[in-house]
Image (cartoon, rainbow, N blue to C red):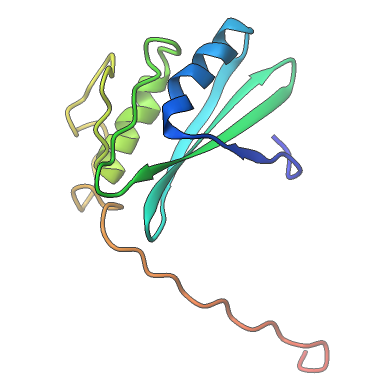
Length: 130
């Protein structure tokens, strides 16, 4: 991936079909990760074929953090999906290998499921301020 690659937003209903289509076209799963936003969770996934990455972003409601598993399409996705389960409290229906919330050891159970506080950006120093 390089800094100029963008993420296309897809609906949660398109999650599985998007993965299925890329697998059928010979793409491999590169990564899946999540982040907590104030009003929703955001999950990003990337697929690669012939050194070309395509990237997608989906919003998952905080009040129902459920993401269908891609493990029937991309078996290795079970690692990413177990991380999402452990870190954000996601339900992952269809998960081929479910560690039951014990994939990662964290000090806090489901550490990224709480409230998100956005910090204001620090003002940049001018050239005169040094």
